[in-house]
Length: 491
Image (cartoon, rainbow, N blue to C red; front, side, top):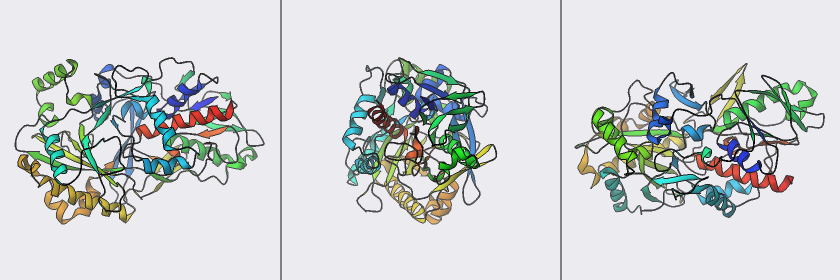
């Protein structure tokens, strides 16, 4: 059995199937790990700020107005799980039931997977560990102000009703926790620095193996787990070979269409007093040193997350379904990851991060020679823009409300947000780095590609909608659901 892609989904599947099958994982990246410094959750941001890093690839996505925004891909074993996914959430039971219905399973089965793979107990090994974020005065005021606006306190892992509370991060006491946390006893064979160029079939549509840049490998089963970009690219190239009669059954597959990505919109806020934000710490050597000392002394601190500390789930259009998540982020910046040439602001401050959970905008992925072109078509849906407008109004009103308003010096670009909100949105949104879709119409209830035998897909590309505002746990859990189904069907 070949698993193509050693990322979030691929390693979850390999870890589950290795006890029952002879498993090989092919990962195109050549790096199995990065330096220890990046394992501290907060310091993962250094990877994105280093323009010459070998561990992350950057491409530009283009908005309809021509603006370029950065999109980052992992060059590491473990994929996005090792560079992203620090903010954790399970999401909505309602959305999960809708997603799982296609695969003839249910939310109860998903919770079994969740309990098996995740733990809030820091002593548990072979699991992805979860820890609540450290809270400061701004978090306390943010949550208290929301409570006064009838948003109750709740568990931010779930999003079926309006609530607010501290964020959970995928971290242990000192270091990040990812899919690598439960891949301890590695029985599968791992092949790195090798790229799959084509999928091979016999005359009846049964897979026989793959052709890589180095050789041909035979296999009875192939599982594509390369993510939206990787899996769609491989299928589109196989489809392009449809002039070869052995690939004729791929002709009618719908691949690369209706891909989605979350947009991320920030509101930068300056405070009257120091709040311990990264704006203050980043420009002061002694404060940095103290933060590091605090972290490795085991005291609650910002280094156990990526800067986001508390959140709220909101139903802004009043249709009974949670549509927006807002988060407190303990810094203000221009762009994201210094993409506009600047990093943290030089005055005490924070930002509110806005994510519309299930955007309607859809784009496509297509191949152009040796390249692939990714276009999520951000903000192509008018409804997505209107929801972000509602979110801006809500957040500004929240920031003007007591008790949080007492600590605010200035809401940056407040005039622009109020008087030209659509321009502000187009000028300031960035990718959420949460691509889904593109292969969701190509598979049946067993995750097997239509008209083929032995070819499966399981990764973010099989989602047609979002279960949550972050896809890390969604991909891990669907990979576990797939594994159980595959074992049941093939043993």
